[in-house]
Length: 312
Length: 312
Picture 1 (cartoon, rainbow over the protein chains, first blue to last red):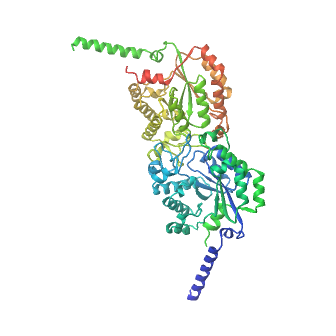
Picture 2: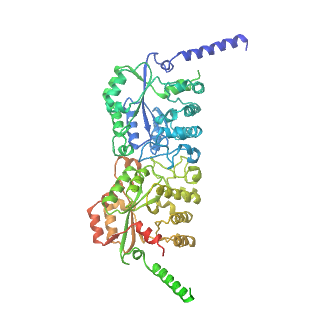
Picture 3: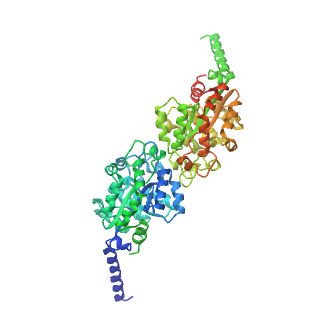
């Protein structure tokens, strides 16, 4: 190869690289630069039968177009079987480091002795985030997160992305590194929103290494939004949605006997909360609002295949 | 002490021993020799919220007077909390070595690496008995059974007895030895019915060592009994009950959304089966039959305290 040819190839590569970096996420996915993109994402699949039933029904018949599974939870086999046979859906792993309810519990998929810093005296995950931050050895976190993804893949789920149940896996810089390492290991996008930790060199390098992107805006109902009515919250949010990659994190289940018992004693993120999410996203109002606001629904699979696993 | 006094003491001890051995279980418990004793025992507490709800309601308000908990199951914390606060009930540990349903699973309470011969590739217990018999290292069985009892005690349950879920822990001579060893270690009666294995010297010695007894007759509905109607089965069984220590093993839950999903694809021991058990034991007919047949309800706590833990 002559030097001239080498230079031409180098310039071409640099241009392709530049083009790739000058495009925003919408363009990389093949949409106009100013498109309002939205992922409507159901968290907590696998948690209970009620959660599975409501989430699957919504994925099948409403604008809800993505979701993620809590692999350590008792009802994982039910959703694993479903998504093995219905691989068209956009399904990730809801990386789980907490068991937050009181009457119904789970622990790690990894052998407890190997991750003993993230397990309480009853063999379950801790019920709160600070306990994990305080006690959790980052290497144990990495091992458990990796094993959750491995178990989902071994169960023939076409995993499209990773996110963090209760945000625990992104609640410290050390954990965030492990979260990114596991995402990169499996070439999977991980849910990230802009924050100061992402500006640190080590984190930036991990993001670059995995072609990771950030979501522009992440919306999830707070206890105040719940008290003021979920319909109000989602209606306002859809109406004010801006161009860029937006995400709703929602929780779908029925206010039934099982779910009331799972969430007993807790109103926030409880069974009536999940029923309210379910009611809004199953409504015609929701469909109408999305259409009126020219919102384009996108999936993590598109992000995985066109960005994270792209060759550019 | 003179030799005469020594001889008198020795004779007295021998007489007491002889008296103790010549009494049948009814007499040891303080009932007439020919009494028809019955334990109506609900298995599988902890399995699901539906199972917990139905079993607790029956213990509170029907002739069902005993039950046992599956400690490795996801809903263990719910029943543990209840029986910690309601220690008057007769509650044992339903020693569990299988996870037999398809959509909903659990594994050992022991760290998986320490009992890897009783865990499948997904980290759950095997779904059938032969797989445990074929793969299970008896020392792993002993460790897991011991840890289940320990966990129940640590959760402040006044454990009255042990029995074996699906009979797996008594399905081979080697397992039976471990089952007895764990019962003896905690001075707890273990459910046993007469069979050839109990005649072997090692087993007999373990039984003697722990003051263990056998149940005279154990009744539990078979698939044929279910098809012919649970009412018929229990009515006939109560009417023909003979003197001695009898036990009914029953399974109480509701035929609800959760339980239909837990038992999906299986009619035997499924949700309608458990609802049928529930219906019969909640009926006035059941109460009337027990009264008409002069049946005395007894508990494992009586057996524990008056026999297994007696000084004779």
